[in-house]
Length: 572
Image (cartoon, rainbow, N blue to C red; front, side, top):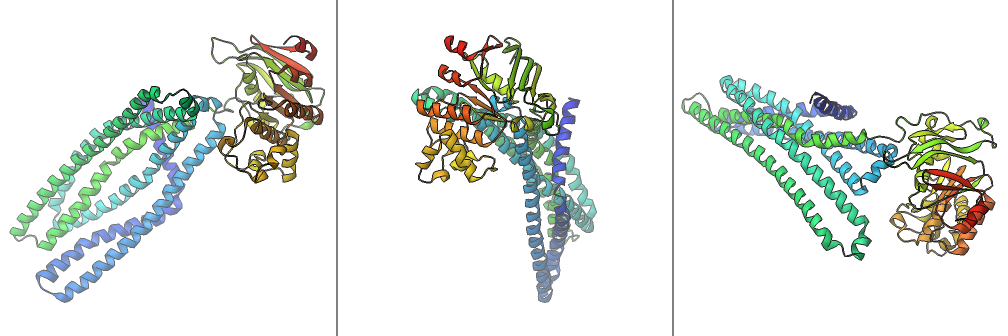
């Protein structure tokens, strides 16, 4: 429990440190708060003058004079309140900007397993919801806490000027309000935590259904899935109901207490007026100043209640920022590799005594040793589930060996940054992803190549033929994840952007899927004949593609064995 309290405290320290980065707006905000508090303090006194000295005594000049003052006071209040709102918007947007940027750069470092475990919809819903809730600190709490304190001070001063004894009644209410809010805030935290968890589960389930919409339609799964939908939806609706009801219970309890206090104040003011100790204007001022104390106190004691709503989101967001990263405890930031330290007679890639397993029950790789030389064309074969994709993920740094070492240019992966590793490798996956944009934007994905280089890469991959048939050529919009392209067209674009990267090592995972025979042979001839200096590792299940390999590695039962091409062709 002590550690949990420390964690909660640290969360709020982190949040207010982020708010502190917007400190350039603080002086203007404080000036506006003081100004509005001062104007609020003056208004009841001015109205008292209009009532007692003007209306009661029928002094028109006095009425006009103080009405003008009242208009000035109200105008100044509105202007400063407008400026104050604008400043708080800057602080709010600055906090939200900081949170989104933290999330964005965390995406770069997160271990790939985090994305596999959670769907895109769940992650995006969680991040957006949590950042919105955390940013509400500036919308509600900051304004209310600072402004309320100043308003309370002004109210107490005003009450003391009129009758200090009655101010004691107002102060006596504070402990009772704090008790009520504490009671509801503990329940609020649990209810809201349940609410955001139900939202997470529903978003994850719905995102899964949307991603599999073809299967949902082809297998007529909507009726079957409806029970799950109905349960998850009801969980959200029920938790939403509980969340709103606890808000209402809290507000009603506070409102009832405020009503009781105001009733007592009206009775006491009436008694004082009847006894000639209060004028009508004085009574009005007293009731107004009482409101300046009672209402802000409700806001201040409700801060704990507001925190109860924000805290679950803050915990989840900062827990997200603490998720394991790819390079944590694995890659050390070093200088770029020294080309003088590497010679072509050494392996460009080497796996030494590599062991890997996803769990303790099944070992995927057992003491694997591989040497891949500069410029070699290496084929990887094996049955489904043998570990081909796992090997590629190890080479790309998405996974790390349980034991053993992987070397690139003679340097251990442990001594390289993840960016160094991936800058040296181009990868074409079985199912490459394409962003919603043009063909050129998806080929020249890092914006570093010239247009001619893009054209050359597309010619080598075979993509140029279908690109020229498009109405807009390279400017053709291909839709999210290349929805407007065929499978073969997508693969050709993926190969083109891998070629364009001009990295030393090219990794190809079943890239000729969707190619016709002529296109497949043309691409493989290009890769084999035009890229002598490039090391190419390609996964394939097609035996006729093995003729392009200098060597073939077969993955079987946790081992990776070397076969010569001619033997593998005779023994698939």
